[in-house]
Length: 264
Image (cartoon, rainbow, N blue to C red; front, side, top):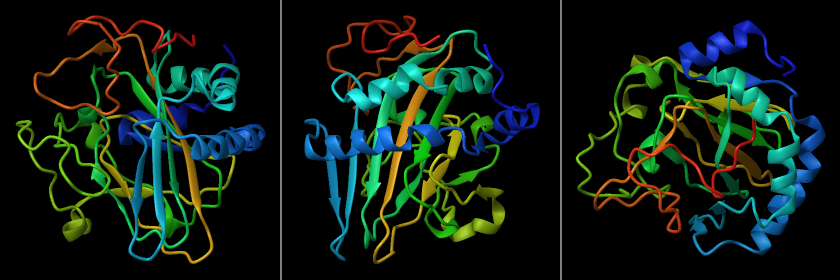
């Protein structure tokens, strides 16, 4: 495979749990924009539309790659899988799912601090989310990460993006009050332009501010990839997101099947 990333970028990813990739998907922004436009007009049954008191809309949808041709084109024909392999240090890469998040202007709804892995029917250490903005994202609207939190060895209680718990009695601990004690954490974040991307581990604690701009939207396509150590997880009485109701894998079996195609 062609080497896409510097050793410093890979090292930052593995030590901080997040890094920025400049200009790596500049040729794909139009394709992904067309896909998101189609997706918003034809959402999946599991779509979430969070309405802000200010009139904004936070649109969240996932697992549409097999019916949105632009998503499929990007997933199978871009350099994303090779980039993911370098970051994870994995010889194989499998798609877990894609996730679209759109905050229209005046969306006074933040993305709460959270980890991705506790939401998932998945156990893995080789993971990467590649978050690709289709609009300019200034510092006050970008994702923030707690550097090194992927190495804390903790799984925190998942929340819906409206702040309610996904599972009330899941036995997991609550996240600490990060916003109330920001000085206690190494918070990293980057301004972004279309074509840039953020890459982060599923275990990295992250969140994002509300979009209080009166005119600017924030569209993002997030690609969720896993490496060779990923196994399916079934947790009794626990709702996962995405739900993957058709998957028949048993707990602990290697991730496989048509829902999770091999990319490398």
